[in-house]
Image 1 (cartoon, helix red, strand yellow):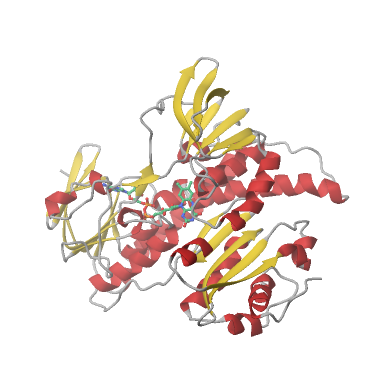
Image 2: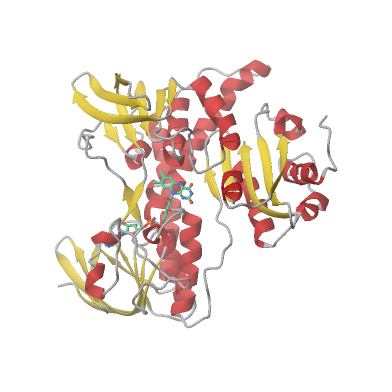
Length: 468
Ligand code: FAD
């Protein structure tokens, strides 16, 4: 065999959660082993998630902005898209980051063991690299095995025209008619890319709105814009069958009234959620409980039911986001190194990097009302933001949600270009227990989109009443 390895802390999986935990534990003096089945470090986020999608979304943004500038006196020729070159650039962005991780691991003497890991006992993982086995023993372990796309039983996933987000990021051609199954963040981001590249996009979503986790008013400007660009957005509709025919993928839809229809697509992107990899690592051999969906339950120190085994990231639950995984990774590593640390974040922001971006943090208005909170809000329409208008865009909204009793900010929803960057200020405000005056009296630079938070707070306070 490839031999035996021991780590004081062994991390299973090298995504944002895993590499963060490994590096932090090493920085705190632990001898760390990092197990990864893929040849590159970085997990879903760096290889087939956050980063490649953002590179392609940048290309999409350049294309659509160039198109739209035509109405304001600056015209460009139709874009010539060289898919190989674009894919190569995207891959180079990924490679720069994943390669960087290799260097950071080396610098910390984190030993990377390549192969697929499964628990064989409470202090043991066996790693299989194409038949070559390594036995990795540990004092403490951090499970960071992540998640993978959900597949549906009635869809021919083995047909190359049926793709998931990983397939979509491969940029293997631009289908003429693309069906995106699932109106969540991942599906809508990929739709943004393929729409810009020239596909006729249809979105189908079971719920009565796209991005069901966010407030309707915040999602509406995105809905309106893509409704104008895409072939169709079918809400309250489910796909009940996909048939692989020579001439295309024949899709059967059923709406909430029971009405059935069919349509033909060149490709179907399935983006109906992600399932955790917890059930695929023989966690039971170590005594770690995994629920029927594949999630591993942890306490506020990221410990599983087995005191020396921690779990972090997508495998422990929602929201399945990289920044949550990173934060949990730090907590687990610090606890493993003997520090007193807890996961005590009040809020975790969510962002759809669509055009416009949709971002929210803390309680949504819907949630706050459901919790019986006396909800106050400040809503600033970007049509009154000079910076937004000078970007050629007016549909954005910044909404701050307050507890009327304390004036404290408890949530924010933002839609518009760069909403994802803007929502960080609201996250800080909530963590710091800021109230409306704190945001309203902080001088924001003019003219920026960040002012819209300032103005939304003033709208709530009543110090701005009329918009120019
Ligand atoms: P993962 O990143 O899933 O990493 C797990 C790692 O463990 C993988 O490398 C896997 O190969 C390895 N592994 C699993 N099992 C084993 C085993 N048994 N043995 C060895 N290795 C194993 N999140 C954001 O916050 N922002 C975004 O913009 C964003 N965009 C996304 C876009 C797409 C298309 C997708 C699919 C996801 C996106 N996400 C985004 C979600 C984000 O990628 C995940 O939340 C994040 O990667 C989770 O990190 P993790 O460390 O838990 O696990």
